[in-house]
Length: 485
Image 1 (cartoon, rainbow, N blue to C red):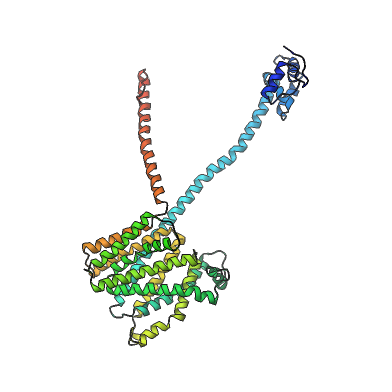
Image 2 (image 1 turned 30 degrees about the vertical axis):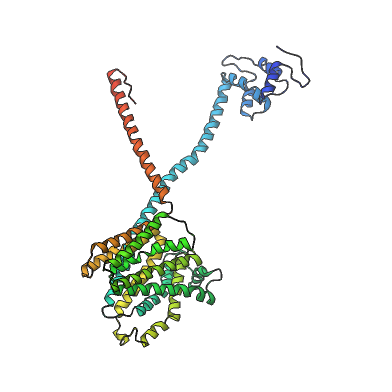
């Protein structure tokens, strides 16, 4: 039912509807063109040659234009003939070719996934094995250092000289690191080039005389105070008590970081700090607040405090350091100790505060063993951060408490009463609470939710298995049963 042509070229009602609805293939004269195209279609018998078949195939395989889009339904009707079958075959071949090109990256990604999982599992297993070895090495070296100091005190009591002597061994830290670099690195560097590269911890200009005095002096003093107070505490208390009290340095690090560095506040770490303080008080109470006990506890807590201050100031002024930079810095501390602090043991010797008869009478075996184990402890702590998880290093440190307790029990130097045992356990628990990550609450909630989801999925799987079993039995009997929800 046609109407008169409008000024805009719309001649039929169908053209108006298509224009209003916005049909994407519409153009003026669409309906007239469509009718002519329909009339031009001729049906061919099977097996006969159609004159327009080849042109229709070429139009179907060519990119669509506006006029070709209008003839698409007609071409689909023509596919019933022999020419249309050929066209569909060509189209299927092109589609399969496209699908084949898309499946190649998917298959390669599926093949790479098991390899990536195997590599990640292998790295985790390797890190765990290294972690266990370093845990045993760290705890045994710290226990050995503490016990050798107690043995040395039986014949030789010069704590500052022992501190100065063991700190001088830190000079060998960087040579040990460079030896490892030569043994493991593919591109080997000269000692001076490696030294300059690691000296960037002091700044872009490297190590200068001004920075050597400005940055090394306060850290060297704190290092010496930490070790000296630790050795003084070992004279008053047992090795177990001193090692347990020294574990409070984690709580002091958190408090100082919270106050000075404005770190994130964590309630669980506040609880751990309170537990550490409670353990300190209980440790002093274990000997009925005896004078030696109180002085020994004060020395041990002072050692833990200076150690915490050292770590916080290091983070504030120097930031984080890799293994090479840490080796360079510790060796620099050894040089500073040898150059500028050597006068202190000399003054103590001539004032007879720390006096010995001759150098031949010194227990060189115990002194070298103590200094060597102390150096090994510092190297293992820095190596462990590279090879394994840092939390395992802290666990190795806290395991020195039961290690020292076992040695003290074998030597019969300590009698554990209820208060001392409770104080030791409380301090160790507080130390472990300090190792919790900042997102520990979110991680715990996710773990609990995953467990709940697994428990809720298990009954559903059991119900589906039972329903399938019932359906199988009912079909075998000729009836169908509907499982109850």
